[in-house]
Image (cartoon, rainbow, N blue to C red; front, side, top):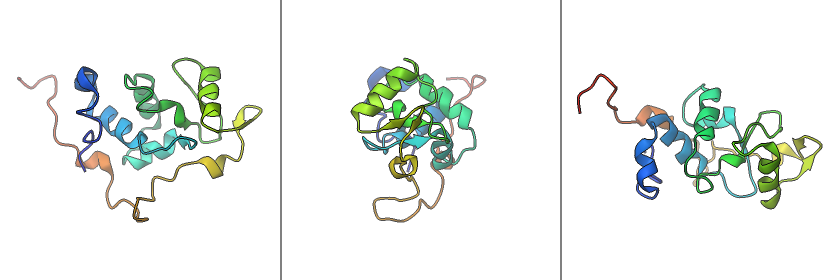
Amino acid sequence: MVCGSKIWNLLGDHAKKITPFQRCVYEKLIEVPRGRVTTYKDLAHAIGSKAYRAVGSALNKNPFAPRVPCHRVVNSDGSVGGFAHGPNKKKEILRSEGIRFTKRKIDKFESVTFDFSREKNGEARKRPIIRSLPPTKTRGDRF
């Protein structure tokens, strides 16, 4: 699977301005259904990376919201984490999708956490997505 194949053609001019890493993050994130959440750490692992903070940074720059639902990514302890429009707005959106909160954390967190390791056929992904990226040009390359 090549990163970006699901969303690349659907999202117009913004898709040309994102990095290959962002493409991987966004494509993987669209697998998380309404009413479920994932963590920055799990999302990073799902694309074959340990860069949890880079995932957060990519989500903060997400030009495709709400098609790419960055509000569904939360901290590993069940707290909401960051959001471009503030944590209260993130909670409001999650509540509208059926997520419940107890004080500052998601209620029954484990039961609403999406598991990337289960594919549609129930098997774990054989290889991380990020490793299958085609080579990209760097600033030093001539176009």
